[in-house]
Amino acid sequence: MTALQNVTVLGTGVLGSQIAFQTAYHGHPVVAYDIGDEALAAAEVRFAKLAETYRVEVDGAADGGADAALARIRLSSDLADAVKDADLVIEAVPENPDIKRDTYERLAKVAPEKTVFATNSSTLLPSQLAPATGRPDRFLALHYANHVWEHNTAEIMGTEQTDPAVYRQVVAFAESTGMVPIEIKKEKAGYLLNSLLVPLLTAASDLLVDGIAEPETIDKTWRIGTGAPAGPFQIFDVVGLTTAYNISAMGGPKQQAFAKLLKEQYIDRGKLGVATGEGFYRYG
Image 1 (tube, rainbow, N blue to C red):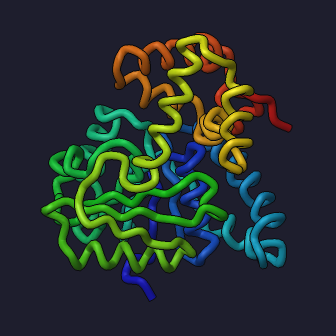
Image 2: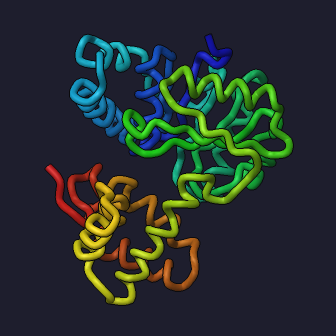
């Protein structure tokens, strides 16, 4: 049994809700935290949809496993309440350094001393956030891939200050939740998965911004040429266009142009990707 039993997930967006549900599905009590009643109402809908997905796609979930997972999840918009019993807090708030640092500064004031903090950031190094945590020795990155029930990797990356014993506890926790721990030896922007994926997505967005081809053509070319099941703009829709916007907005001129395109043509029109039924493609 892992030493990290009680888990709090901060943020109930696309990936945060998946992390919470996957953790609860594997027997851990989970508190899912978000900033208010509206966000928690949306989280309830996401968890219900995840339960349906698990019943169809995950062996054993239809035999009560998905319902048991739902029963292990408690929702809270009170940060102190959400983390009062936490052995592990997994942060999955928006990919914005200021939001993340503010979250950790507030978290550090209310979390028990025992609690391990982990960021699910896909672009920020844990050392960039560690000073705000107040416990750099009990802080590291734990990065999940989208669709955690099928792409079951958890990238684990510490800093020079991370206690090796804490690192091993998080590896054991990842295994306990059905994930394959990917142990990263030292800090690397993009970790392993995004070091491979982001150049593809950047190249695709550059082709779109430069007017070279439309998303459908770019995706079709990638699928036919490589045998991949999805093209880059299909991947953008799965990741969520808000996340794509937040990351692109911090990039160079061409990436900022892509962020502007995302905001004006998609996000401002409520087209956020798979989660809302429409992004670059329509779903449902």
